[in-house]
Image (cartoon, one colour):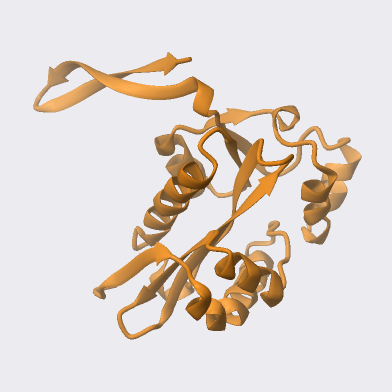
Length: 201
């Protein structure tokens, strides 16, 4: 879509977008038949006011996308949750920009925290991988009961329960700041850099 889209950290002036955001979260989950834990407009508004979310909009103020931060176990774990893009703006690359921005915000606010996510979307998995996330088992995520209680509104919650919370339809991915990955060029082929990834403790 040929419009200038602004992606930035949300502030209190963006609370008016909360209803549109939560309505789109719910309708998107129904359309896909997969799980997005339901959030209220009040919950989203709180994240906006706390400076723990990223908003995307056009220059004329049309809402485009959103994502927010949740901290668990006294900040040991951080989740980038609720990524949603308004239908007219999907497949425009805006989701990647939102994910990059919320990831950077998470690193600034919680530099020593492990950042994790649960997703059924291949596009989100690819973005996460580019940011340094690795697929992990559910046992490597937070054990905070409040986090898992948030899955109760998901259509797949019964599957999660039946598997004793060991796995579900979502793929778990984790970024560990103590195992930061850096890439170094090791060769060039036909003008393209070939990189080797190194784990760094």
